[in-house]
Image (cartoon, rainbow, N blue to C red; front, top):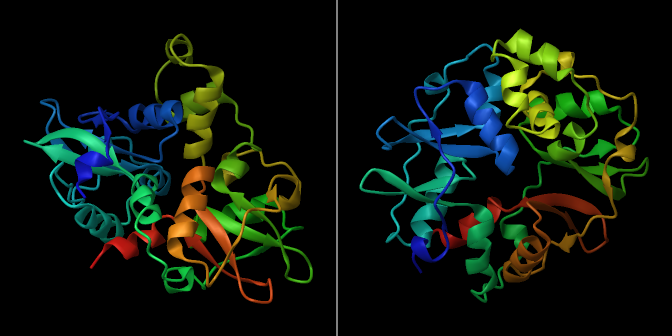
Length: 282
């Protein structure tokens, strides 16, 4: 099966030279966590991710935030090649390039279709992560923010005082709870006149940009436990469930991750959509 059968054509791209705010605005508007980057002539340069921007808060020039080591795929490449490069580079938005032009983007969610229809019945236990970081449902949101930042995870299971799974919390859930003064943020970040952007973007888009960018110290985090914002009673899978069924659950529910339970209904790990890409390699 070929990349061109599963990619999304006509992708949104960021351009260099440019500034970090340009990429952030595009990510916020379209709900992406990463973008292909092209030069002024439209040639592929690399990839920029929201995490790279957040981890380099003092860097304004987009060109210095671009990952230039991300090897794209071609439309005629096999999907196994795409899966291998997603895993090797740790990216969720893999550019599809033809004659130096970005003609599409491929994500793990796109390739879950391949696994779902493959009939692959290997248990998810072969692909899941066991070294996860559950958080207690009474943990303050500010602590959960820090835990995600330090662990590099964007989703965590939530447990009660007996260690039983009660929910799941993602970075999106957390960002929905915080507040930021957009006008002040624009001034501090030096991204121009707020009024210029206000004409073309909704207030929600602007606030999302600042929430993605700002460090925890500059966010107004509610003094609430994670239980207040988590998704309760999340869909779960068992460690012996076949991955074609797990892929179906993830794709149809648009879940980037699912908690995994053992035979005693106890939490034993998490499986992320990127983890299942291993099934397509080799």
